[in-house]
Length: 388
Image (cartoon, rainbow, N blue to C red; front, top):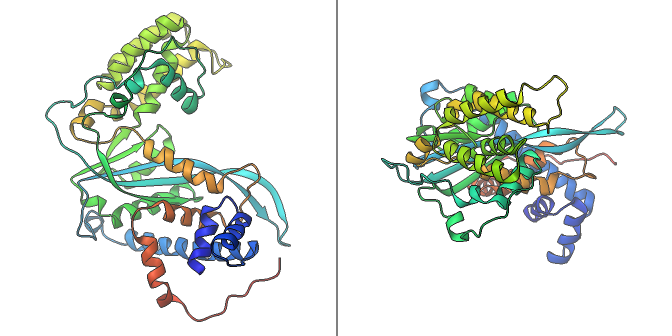
């Protein structure tokens, strides 16, 4: 019954909704407060368990950390990382809630994958998804907030747009999530990858957008993974710079050329074109608007220069590695459905809830093993709660 209560507390939009779901579906009357307490208690146990696993992994020698603790090592191991948002609220010494504030959550996806290694690029042409004006306008708006009026879209074959030759296939996903600082979350993510046997995989990739927090974690814990910049984020910068200060027709043609060069791993060619465009427009001033053409070009130029070593996409495709962080993007959206909202505030229960949501999104049997073995860790003590 406790497992059902926790399941409802994690999957419902709120603890109140979870209580109602239990009443209707399980014919069990469990108060909203009871659902909250039990969910947070189990979440705290899972979070503490993860902390112990992280500490144990950190105490291993470096050669031991590069080995696999499990027999089944993935053909391709991929770690992806990004941040979400959650509202926290601190309580004072008298237990009263203070003002709420937004804080970034840290989320990691660990994907075991299968793919083939090729001697040639299995998909040398830019996929239809990134060559359709309407779709690119939507992608750029969602990721970078870029508003544009693209030329009329051509009819695209949906089957072709989804089927990219050589794309690795995901077998199993596991998720970790926390409100910890990036310095604390890095070892947490590294330990999770170790326990999946990722360190022993022959092909390993760390895929993320250009955030320095992500690449700080890579430098400290995942340097034996091939670093790959998310292709879609890079493309959005190129899209904005190509259309900046141009008509939709001429800007779109420039984007198509630059996008194909990026897809082919010719980032230096795009950087040279951006430098020429910056020379034509001039350098942005100190108080330049972010939407100004010369500022958009400057932003794209800086981004590509900083990330150029992680943009050899033709080589990554030959190795059968992923080049987008779509898995982590969709995972964060799933987590946000439970923890993010203008009227949702978390205090002591943020990390426990994030730990449980991550558990339920994972396809590994960790949570099932926890419930199976939990009775062996109980000390028989009664849990008392003070009245709210």
